[in-house]
Length: 295
Image (cartoon, rainbow, N blue to C red; front, side, top):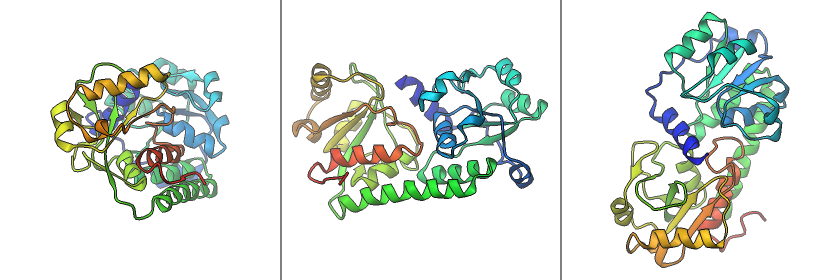
């Protein structure tokens, strides 16, 4: 599951699969979408937050939240969309985060409006909330949702205050031997969350959204905190100790020396949805444990 989510995000950020223009204004305002297929977990969560979950008829293989999605048809993933299933569902709107020429042609041939969710950066997430709200003709609800997310993030920022930004590494991998690890560069919403939570992403100067780094690069950046994002992993004391030993084996890293390696297993850890506020709080708790973030 972790690998799938990471590859999904990387494919979207790196591109190479083709992009779609935003829907024309008349398509957005003519009538609200009633039969929606959504290919990204973040999009599904936004639609439910806008109280329009009853309009969803199909979701990707990676969608697990909220629980209601268990009853919806599955239409494959970014790399393997089920064209026959999509056509059979007869949607009037398909929402994606990156797509290819074949899927674009399929939608054009079948009169399906396509919207590409721009949720890569934090600004893009706010944009997606607003534009999906327009497609559903729920602009008020979308504005309220965006304001709520901003407000919760502002509260995290205020809690950490003007404390020194702590240099940290966000590692995205499965438990096991540490070789190459995925992390985040500038322009990705997780980099934004690190800064909001009172951290400094040690790879925040890297232009690539999802760089792959080796042990030597980690050692040279000397993070004072390492956060492992492992959504859906069942963490226990033995596995936590094993993770620490894996990092210790790499060499002298301040985060390891000081026992500041943390694992976040929440299912929202890598999803650019309204629940990203939970990830901001988790990061702040790791970076500034002396602060009561949720008070």
